Length: 42
Image (cartoon, rainbow, N blue to C red):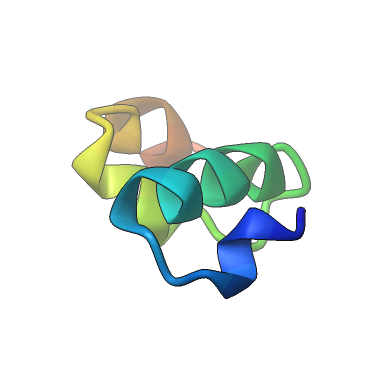
């Protein structure tokens, strides 16, 4: 949770992935390739 402040692409991705569970930062996962799964709830 702290590393996300670092601004690292790798750290940011992990942070966003966890947020995706909440269903708020879905578009961010688009880079991960999970956009398909996230596209359904949208």
